[in-house]
Length: 240
Image (cartoon, rainbow, N blue to C red; front, side, top):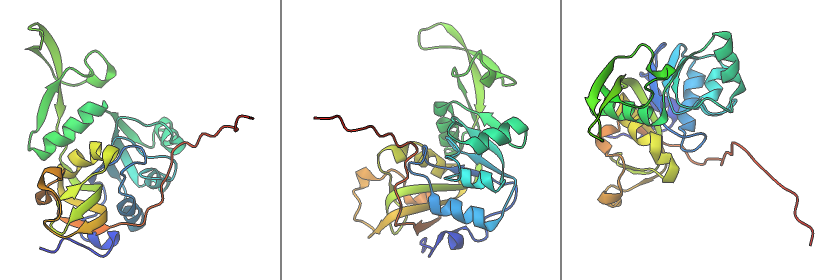
């Protein structure tokens, strides 16, 4: 099977529809599938739900889709640094499901493993637990503790960014980009990865592969990329 497509629009062809759930990798502006997000914006689909650690910043990452009002709901852990996100949330234009980072990563991983739900102590006694099933288990200390039920995420589409991949889709993520890209890639019915470099099959060390190609349906080469920085802090040089 040839998994390599010439560009993001071609890779997304036949997959996009209004009101779909998309799992998107990345952390801040690190490891986000930029080319795929741009192509989703250009497609004009709307009413989207994104499961992603955050929504990027104004007009970058998922933030560009907020600007065009194509996103109806965010399932996220962190929503700072994005004024348009804040505006839409406070005005009631955008539905937001806040989810602790570890829980969100596990919800994606669980979906990828076919697990419909799991219990966690994270969020007990907070707004995160409201409306969720509570159950008592014996915890690590041998004492009974309360846990809440969280649902696994089963997305219509996964979009992620990898550092390298071979021709069969075996992928390697680079440093921080690994944290949400890996679980996000596994929980979608279809997974598209954009990579900086395609290498020959067999050239990657099997022990270094983070995402097996069996999870990958389509891929594109997205390079070159501009290094985007969320905050730039400078200071005056101290006088000699």
